[in-house]
Structures are given as structure tokens and as C-alpha cells.
Amino acid sequence: MIRASEACAQIREVALGRTLGSESVPLSELAGRRLAEDLLSQECVPHWDNSAMDGFAVCADWTQSATATNGVRLPVSASIVAGDSGSLQDRPGERFAVEIMTGAPLPHGPWDSIVKIEEVQVLKGVDGAPSEIVISKPAKKGDFVRYQGEDFAIGQLVASKGMLVTPDFILAFAALGIHRAQVFRKPRVAVLSTGRELVNAHEPLLRPGMIRNSTAPYLEAALPALGAEYKWYGTIEDDPEAFKRALTVILADSPDVVLTTGAVSMGKHDFVREALESMGARTHFHKMAIRPGKPLLFSEFQNGPVIFGVPGNPISTAVGLRFFVTPYLRALARLEKERPIRAKLFKNAPKPEGLRCYFKARLDLTESGSWVEALAGQGSALLGPLLQANAWVEFPEEGSQMSQGEWVDVHPLFPSDKPWVFSSHSKDSSMMDPKLTPREIPVQKGCC
Image (tube, rainbow, N blue to C red; front, side, top):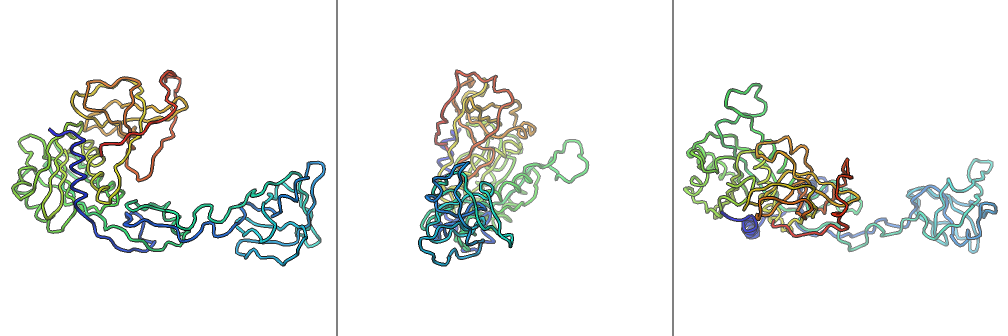
């Protein structure tokens, strides 16, 4: 029985030996795709110095004598709004304020700060426009000025090769004029459910002995979020020949990954490994020292897809996707291994000796430190605790109990390419032992 660290190493090695083609796509099609190139800024953002507030552009030196009882008076001799160039008629040596709106360019010349409209006294002329302002406190150079290149400078890395493009990247790309990018072809994942007891979620009534297929809809929702294409090939009964027929259809569609649920344990109807090997697949490993998901299988066809066979219980499927299929997809995109954060265990937690555990958990980052609790109800068929979880806690193989206060690895419930932080607060932080409060959260490399 293979250890999780060795299994992850084999999964990554296989993935790094394979490649996905790439293509150039427009901005409108980039969301949900993984970049096949680093993207660097070709422009400055902001493109020019501009105002962060509605108010008046002034030279800070002109305002240094201003007090609440003896304000500095400046005439208002120009107005600039968003879309203007920022150029003013040259008036050497003349001191005057410039009315300015949020986003408008800072006028060229001595003006180096903005005073907010609500912090000055505005005197208006007969036409209703500001004619003079009274400033009651000194301004500082740079007050409410957004400087050119403050957000992005030319040549700055915007997004790295392998990153999954999310809407926040679209926002930045559009601001920078990045209207096309080279992306990897989406990995195609074929999903096949096994089990004569399974019926679809829309079935109105369950016959005795039947259960609804929850894993296929879960994978349908989760895989596109990982940047993959999903295709479900239905449910087959517990029959090796039916499995081979279904797999023949799947192989004809040339997927990158085949993900099967069920029929990988040691029971009478657990046939996936033997059926795969009879069709020429090479088994890398079958059964890991983990919980849940111990019977997980990983194999590959030499000139075809890799196969992940995960147990049919829903939490086993979720763990298999999160900790083994996801690292494979990340490695295909040449991403580094994920890094968990470290937190202290809130209370004692039993675990099976010799098995690495991936347990549903609740992470709290509080003033007293980072704490995680393995929730009650760790059975692989129990979905309710998953809805109460916001993380997975990972326990090592050694030992039959984890003790309160031990540092443990914690993973986000669903992966992200970005560093992650939770900011939930315990309802009763007084329960936490102040002697165990960490000041820093050490980071440790994960096995996957």
C-alpha cells in the first residue's frame, strides 16, 4: 500500500511527462483558461498622474502656513475633468488652484497635491462656479494623487504561466490593454460512474436499495473551476464487460484524464483495475495509506489518457479530486505544488494508525492565532459536515490521535492558484488556550 507522498510524486512525474497544446484566444474567452505564457505589462496603470478625489489641485508648498483661523486663499482659475489632457495655459509665477474631478489628470506644472472639496471653503462667482478657495490646513505633496505606474509599471509581471484566469485577472488585463493571450488547451476529463444502485438526482422517488448519484454533478461543477473540460459518460452497472465497452467509447474521444467512481475496492463487483489492465493500461498504484479514499487507483495508457479510479462514496470522490486529480491537472499546467498553511489543532482528534487523513475541518484565524478543528462526522458518506467545513485538515500517517495544540497542515476546501487566507472568527475565542497562541503561521510544502 503506497504512501500519499509517493503517490503524489508519481502523479506529478507522469503529468510532467505529458504536454497540452496551446492557442491564442481573445480577452472575452480567457476566463477559466490557464495561461501558457507569462503576461507582462506593456503600459503604465495609471497611464498618467491623476486625482483620487473631487477637489482642487494645488502646490503643497503654497499651503504650509494654513491654519483653522488663518486660511490660505487661492483663486480658482481652471477646471479639469476626466478625459481632459491636463494641459493648462502657461502662467509663470502665478499661484492658483485648479478645480479637478476624480480620475482627471493632474495638471502639468507646480500642482502636486489634491485638497478634497469637503475640506476647503469654496467661494463662488456670479456664474456659480468656484472662484476662490480657503484652505485651513497644510497639504502634503502627493495627497490624493494616483501616480503614473503606481498600480502597474511597464514590464511588471501581471500573471504567470499556468495561472487560471479568473474575473479579477480580466479586470487587470482590460485595464492594461491585454486583449489576447496564449493559453493551454483545456484538459479533457471523461467521467464514468459505476454502480447499479445509482440513479440521477432528478428521479422523483427512490426504489429500495437505490441512491442518487451525487458525485457526477459534483465533478461537473468542480472540474471546470479547475480549468478542465468535463464530459460525463453515464452510469454503468457493476459489470466488467460493460465497463470495457464504455471505456472503448471514451478512448475514441481522446480525453486527457478518465475519472471513474466506484468499483475500485476489494469486493465482488470491484473490477476496474483488472478491466483496465486487460485493455493495456499500466497500473502505477492501487490503494493508498489514506482516509478517506484508500482504494484510489492511478493508471495510464501509453498513448492515451491517465485514469483515476476513486471510491464511490462522495467524500472519497471529493478527496480524490482535491488531493490527487487536482495536483495532476496543476502539473500539466506546469504549476508548482500547492502549499498548505499551518494551524494549531483546537482539540484532540482520533485518527487511524498508519493512514494519512484528509478530514473535513473548520479553520478560524483569530486574534489568538490560527486554529483548526476536525469536525465530527468524518465518514466518507457523510455530506452534512462538509457543508459546515471551510477547509481540509491533513494528519500524518503516524499515531492514532492528534493532540490539541499540535501544528497541522490545512488546505482550502477548494484549490486556488493564489495564496489563501480565511478571516472567519470564532464565536467563542475565550475557549482558546492563550498559552498556545501562535504569532506567525509557518508554511510547509505539501506532498502534492
